[in-house]
Image (cartoon, rainbow, N blue to C red; front, side):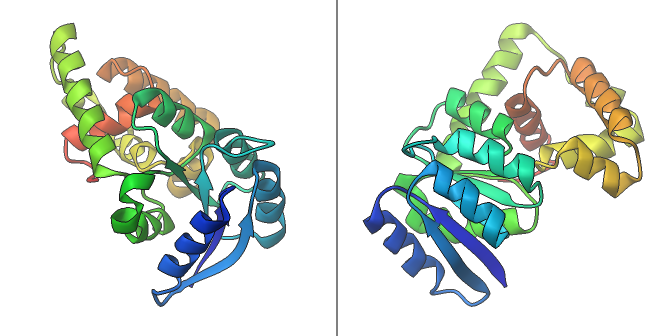
Length: 215
């Protein structure tokens, strides 16, 4: 059973999301929040598996609320729900610790896929956003004249690269591979340097381009 907290300041949107989710077996909506601070409080109290978080929340915006939730409860997966499809918002969401980024315009189609992916500790982005970002990333690579350096990674770096691209934190990667977080951070730095990547978004998009992960 996937336990979900819905955070959106519009009651109609919360109701619609709840109805859509509860049509599926194995999904249980355990709470609703109408602002960011309420979402943080309920996440602490209810410890859901997932939070579906509207990006534009009163009192505390969705990205800041996500950061606080993930900091206090790193096992909770957060899916950002947004009307914005540009890289800046996605980067901020990933930096805050979100595992998914879902556009409201396609939520009726993508919501369950996003929930299933993030519940399995994978990342999920609306296909429109993913394609736009991937196209832009490939164009940047061409402009920078970069060659593919993936084979320069060691086997251990390739393991860590995939786990990071799937949205796992340094601490989670360390636990999976029985390493120290410091060692993981050192490997992460080397990976970013070898591949000439400069952000979490670029890391994920590089992994998609190499078909290491799939949207």
